[in-house]
Length: 431
Image (cartoon, rainbow, N blue to C red; front, side):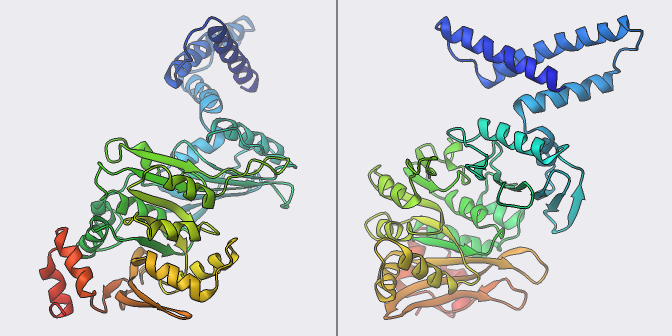
């Protein structure tokens, strides 16, 4: 199979070069696949003829189909990882060496699966093949560049490490719901009830700046997609990410006017790096209606807050934090590490003028992902951010009404269509 894969790959490369020399357009992916299937069929016919010549029976239909599938996956898919990625039940894939493969399912259960490669060296080759086909440019994976962080064609996020670990490591975090609506958050995922979904929808339509907080793998990106689905299609979005995950630029119907920017690591000479903080500055020059940062994880917090407070209301971002109040602590820590080296008091003033709401995701009493807290930012008071927890964790860990919204905020939400009667029942009337 390796010989056949290499032979077909060489033929495809040669054919592409010949077309280029003749001034013909580059083949599409589907055209390359069609050509590869034709070449593979010819090779399989030749292989069966050789078997007959040697007095051996030809491959059965099942054997031939399995053979062809393996070769096509090696050429265009992700090799032995393809089967795992096609299993809709799997949420995360964790590989600690070629023969130590573990998967975590959406229901929380885990299982060890069959090896994905014959050796760690073969696993490194597989990762390099994936890297050559993914992202905006080829990413290296060797002792000089021992880590790799890329987005796979299905939107999953792959991180690999070698040389600095006891074995070659590979982690794939899957996004099972690439396109998410508010209805999906309620009906399919159970992240919130319909009443809370109505409040979130109004927050987006009223152009409130929102930061989604939560722990690792709790669904922050999925919730961000759901919130973004409410944004009117006439608005221009600029998305900024470390690695493409949101995928808003891939849905031309919901978001026809999107400029998606992705950070770039430095080359071996230490040059060419472009971080998210710089991309936020670039994004502000692109006439956005809203700026969406996939995840705040460093100095981009300062330009992001500046963007939110300079006329780009309705912006959205995510951040790792264990509680909704902890979001403010993380923002302050990142601001202190930024080139501006902002003090806590200065950071809090910046955050209070930029962020309107914090939405926090956690796990309910049954182990399901759920919104457990929503805070409305009110003001800054020295070393403290003043906020009202308008939704707080209930007995089952899911959000229940807490403090009332400010009158002006409530009016803003009603103006964009929120059914105030629902909130009046919760809060005891408008204050």
